[in-house]
Image 1: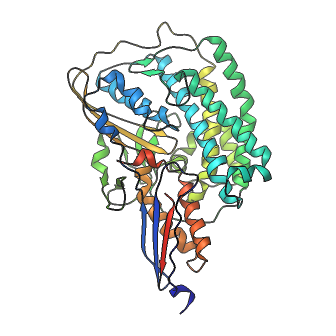
Image 2: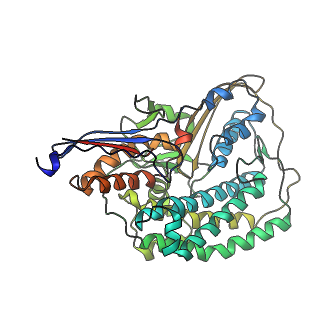
Image 3: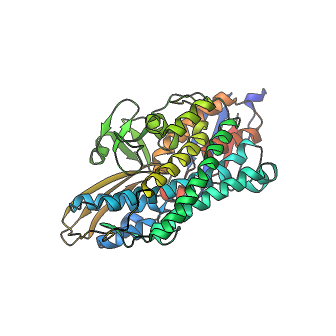
Length: 433
């Protein structure tokens, strides 16, 4: 029997360095992939059902519990949806500080993923602890940047994990000027470190894995889209959040507790590389100059460039937070009054892992009748399966099974999947004949 025709079964009980649990089933017959299934089997968490009957004032703190890594994304998306329905016009201060708050989450999440979850793959390390032995300065720098992101979240959220600072109509409180001055100095000091991070990630050898895929991300006429804008697609589509269902669909697959998403029947990519592909012209000039220096050409067709894309967005978030905080003032009130009304509320923002979409049906008393949340990881699930298939073919199916397993893990971790958010990874079973 030839090498391609051997029958092999590989079992990996736990996929390290991702949030949540899942598995991958891979079958190879006569040198061809005949089955490839990304199975997310973490039990459904029923958050959408929990929200039914809850008062609008409870929603921001409840949805923050969906994820311990990106709670700001869930809070801001929910708040904006309800504010739009209730006809709330945020004070410009609150709108600007929401963006700063969100920048903190991008900084901490991206830095965490780069240094603790993804980078070890590209240095032959099994953990960040091993990576720290060969790149101690880089890991320490990453932890400092991550800590700064957490501090920025705590500044407006009272704490960095499941923050409680957001309310419908703005924030519960406003930081004093003294705290703002302190954080501004830290942000300025972090700029050269973030620039060095871009150079470092761009220098890391990643597979040359050219693929065609659809990029989906928010677009804004002036800003690099984070918390506001239209939903944009690389084919030119631009839509409001309430038109999401007209173009994007969710479908249940028997092998996953997360729904699979599609754009007119095809998989699509959300996340930092999709955002960079569609919005790179909105980057601050220092980030554009660094990209030109590294030679990274955009739009990119290599999903492994997501590592560098996250580093670029760290620098962007630092610049944005500093720009907005340089004009900081203590407002007369950090929130505006709210009067609930019945109707349907929709909104989307860019979570660190990609587009996050919320829809709420509300009654006259401001209570949730029905809720639907589409997180980034479930949107990426079909794309991950497609990526695995194409990437394995590019990599070569005749590699030893351990090499195939490690390559699959590298592909999946590259998306920074938040499986707990997606359930409504890696066990690997490989069969060959």
